[in-house]
Length: 347
Image 1 (cartoon, rainbow, N blue to C red):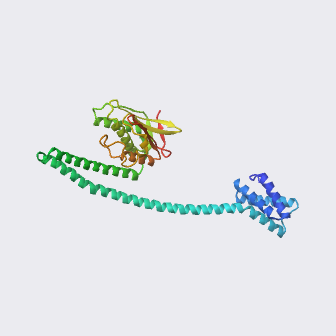
Image 2: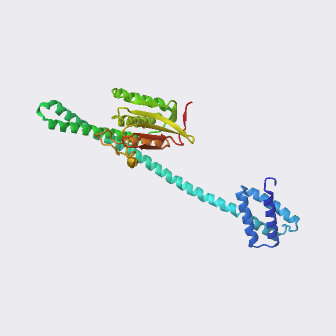
Image 3: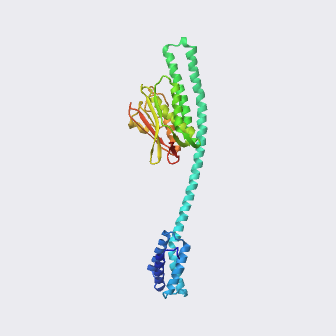
């Protein structure tokens, strides 16, 4: 009996002896309460059987032997009532388990339906890409042919119209490509590995500088930023965020772009900060929506899909992304990779 609480044995023995000498509902209620107490303390049914046997022995020593059939029935009644909480707990477990099984079945059905929908979406996306790209290429190609072959027969206004047609066709082609990329990052499998974000960031900024060698942009990238994630998808994140910072500082003669990180509560948060066009915080909730733009295409080129793609990639890594800015005072985008991705900084 060393493993059973001594005070529980004493209380059980007293209540049992009371029931053997004067059985009533009060004693049975006490048996139930003792059973509930034992269950809460982590005892099992076998522990209760041992407890009951020892309490019977004590009751016999105190002059209330349970050898007679009538006494045995009373003792059994008391013991059964003390086991009621255990039975109710087991029944609750069975019901919970049944509900959990039903829920799992429903989730499996939902997963199968989602996978089927994704397959249909993928098929639709490639059909759209194939069916729309061909006529767009024709529109662009024939417009260019008209400009080149009939240049001497077109007036200035006609040439301008054809240039508008070509620009629209090319913009539509870019929209199709961006939508396909958005679809791919949602469906593609994550391949987790250690990713050197500092190296990725410097490579992207160097590529941007090669494209526009005439620009003077001060860039800083913190050393040793690494994270566990999908290198290809995290590259897409940085290409969009650093590309936006480069684009929206295009009208600044003193453009600056910084890529760094900070640690708070064990979580690494990354930031990309620029001193470019910025945005009105009143419209910040639109930043990550598909086709949402806070600047006109005549000011800055783009399709309005890049940040939606970034948000989906960050969410797939278990993280969050946010932004702060002010008009003509730059913007700062911050993101983390959440609890599902361990991030660290080298010393």
